Length: 275
Ligand code: AMP
Ligand code: MG
Image (cartoon, rainbow, N blue to C red; front, top):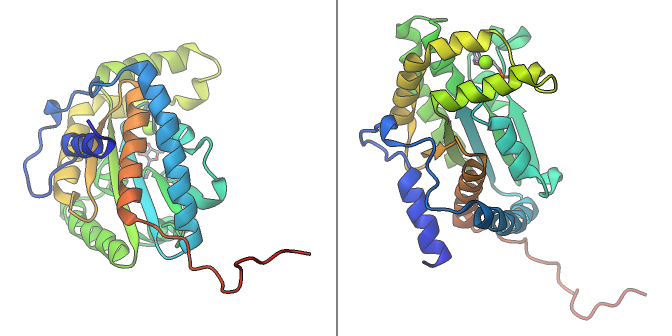
C-alpha cells in the first residue's frame, strides 16, 4: 500500500465521523492496527522526520498554526505521547500546555478563557495535555456544575473551535483510549515503583470507580464535537508503541494537508557571495 493510501486508511479507521453514531466499545484499546512493533519504531523515526520538515515550514511561513488536543483517562499515556512525539523536533516551534484543576484567576472567568490564552500562535504547533474538554468530562461526571450548565458547553466548544479554524488554526483531537485493565496495571506500577509514585494520587481511584460514567461522558463529547474542521480520533492506547505512532501519523496527516510553504525569498540572493 502506498504511504498516502495507508494514511487514509488509518484516518478512516480512527476518525469519529461527524454526525454519525459512535460505539466506543467497538474500538479495541489493544489494537495493533496491523503494525509490527519493530517496524513501527523505524516508521516512527521516518514520520517524525517528516513532521520536523513540515514544522519548520509552518514556523517560517508564520501564517497558521496547529492545535493537537490530547484527552484521556489517567495512565493512558498523555505525557508519554508528548515526550515521544516532541523528542527530536525543534522545541522553538512547539508549545505544550497542561490544564489542571482551575485555580486563582482562572476560576473568576468563563471556562474557555484560560484555554484561549494557550492556543498556539501563528507558526506554532500547540499540544494540549487535557483541555477545555475537562469542562464536559470531569466537571460533568463529578457534578461540579448542574446539567443545565455543562450541556450547553458542547455548542460553545464547537463555536470556539470553529473560530480558531476560521482564523487559521488547524484543530486535531485525539482520545487516547486505554482499557480499564491496562489502567490497573499502570497504576500498580506507579505504586510499586518509588520513582513513579509521584504520578499517582489516591484521588485517581475515585475517577477509576466512575469509569462507566467517564466512558459515557467521553462518548457524548466525541459525538457532539467531532466536526469536519475539528475532528476527533480514537487512538488505541494499551500499547505505547501503537499509540505513539498513531498520534504521530495523525499529526503528520494534518500537517501535510496544511501544505505549509516557505516564505518568498528576498530578491538579489542568486549568486550572492559573502566576502
Ligand atoms: P494531571 O493531568 O494528572 O496532572 O491531573 C490534572 C487534574 O486536573 C485531573 O484530575 C483533571 O481532571 C483536573 N482538571 C483539569 N481541568 C479541569 C477542570 N476544568 N475542572 C476540574 N478539574 C480539572
Ligand atoms: Mg487524576
